[in-house]
Length: 510
Image (cartoon, rainbow, N blue to C red; front, top):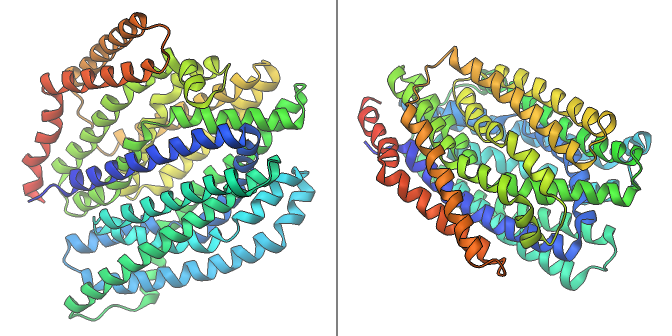
């Protein structure tokens, strides 16, 4: 039998590489053309918008993916129709309610909170997404549960293409050069991308459902039995994501407040937050191309193995995903620690972020491993555990940011310090929770060999850079050469073949 887990992960990884590549280039260009202050304003308004999207979505993607994968493994595909009908009706009601609250009530709340007026204006441009994104998420959950990753991948690519094209067109040729107009243009481009991706995904979904209904011969069960099951899986996920969204919203308000209290003006505070969220985070989250694909593919893969009662497949899939995360994230962490400042200057034309990048690199491994662990726990249905651990991590991150910025007077580096503390605690709690459910088998050579190869990679890059010190662009070429050496070393040592070969021994048991 074909390995759907690795197959789905590969599709998602290729998609993520394309999306992250386009998104990264787009981020570089908007930082250069629009500036970090405009990026900071958009990123300060975005968390408030995400809160409404999370509430309207109600965790349906994870719930649908898990239930659909379970029904497919049990030969009960005919029950998927009722699930989707109920989910669409639920998000329709919640989306309309959220849109009304965001449009009529949120402006007053912004006034009460003393939020900067420009942030509130950017938020209003984002409001249409409260209706668009939840419907798109429900369809993604369906394809994720069916392990047909190609369709949501195509929708995401279309979304990113339209977002990048419209964003560059607006900020370069249409909008005035004032900061507010540029920030609102970036928000408008995000909405146009969401709409394009949703329309394409709707076409794929209608086609797939038409084909599935032709093969359905059994009656579906009443929707009143579906809603409680959807909510029991979706609500804990909603609480988890809501905690993250509220955490982001508090962060977007807390960080500028602390910076202003430390002596910066509002424009400088927005610019510093833009440097952190638009530049530093863009670099440090590069490996999430893989870990995000893993986390998404793990939910139905783990749910399928769990529903079939195959402990061997479950344990090996979990071990496999942790090792993949470790092998692929380690070299990036070391590169960012050593060359973070040079990369910020070369790619974004932003100076002085070396200390922030080094601080972020200390907690990067927790960030990457966290996505993988969350995907496993959600696939096992432990959404409540994910929620509680996420809440603890978010609280520690915010407290850490306040302490580092205000008390220790670290300035912009304090933002990174709080982030490291939050992700470290959250990752540790999730790892402890998973270890009580599934045994993770990690071989020492699979842990230590990537460390050795990564340091050799750094030496190779350093030698290339020393040969051509006057050509900064060669740093990127040197990193490419170092990365190729790292992959070749993993291949020659048998680590890659071990990871892909393991699966064939247990997929037959599913």
